[in-house]
Length: 407
Image (tube, rainbow, N blue to C red):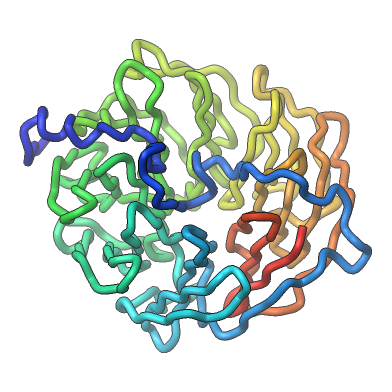
């Protein structure tokens, strides 16, 4: 373990312990898959059924370039990235869909399944972008002027992945966490204001695996958990000490889903491999014990917890699943819809399949209760970007197109 700052100074950075800023700060923040990285959006008054042709399209934009990035929305602005001629661009829209600014930030992933990957993190007046080439950019939100840049792979002995780096930046207080996946610098913490290294952990000394980390702050010690290679790994968020490792093998080496956490229980899923496993954190978070395993093997579409049940789609057998959170029992499997992404808002599931279908589904353990469905007709390439809901609008990104639907 390499400690760059004294521990007391690192502790000072944890005055704010949530992923969003405190009540006294009016600056709005936004990150990957919602406030808690769990795919749950705190919206109210949404439609419980859509017209036959789908909800009304408020606006659309074509010309983002190549990419699979979701939108981030903060301070009445929409942030999204796309790649044109190997260059990554940040696009900024107002809530009416007017393009306000376009800003180049550097080279992006152009080797396979081309385009941008990670979601912009809007945090306390700064924008954080992690490219598929492993470079972390910090920009001023108001001026888009560069604040600092770190080439994580070159500076921290990391190796890029077959399909490029896809980690969406995690920020807690004044600390930004990242996974270079190096043998020495396996997992690191940086000062979000300066990019200065706070600590580095050797971790499991294996490459990362397309996953964005999760923060756990309600136990005796704060913890950051991420999938690294074929394992789920937990670190002390203040010191970088590796706390525990759980095997999470899969034949593809791909575990892109951010783990779900609630009240001492952690849920992690891996496509085509170990399926979904629930773990109980013990000894204040310093250790872990197995609770149950289920065959649900979501590859990269995310899973959501609603009440006592978990919903998501499988990679190997192409079913949508409902799984009991307490027991791991499969309540149903359905192939009425192509597999893909899932989020939750105002009592309903929003499913975006890899076939371009968008569905409104009532979450119930009895059956896959599909209420409404429509097809995405704009855009290019794969239907992989996770949808986002903000102020009654469903944002769907399909390659070079961004669509905003009134839901």
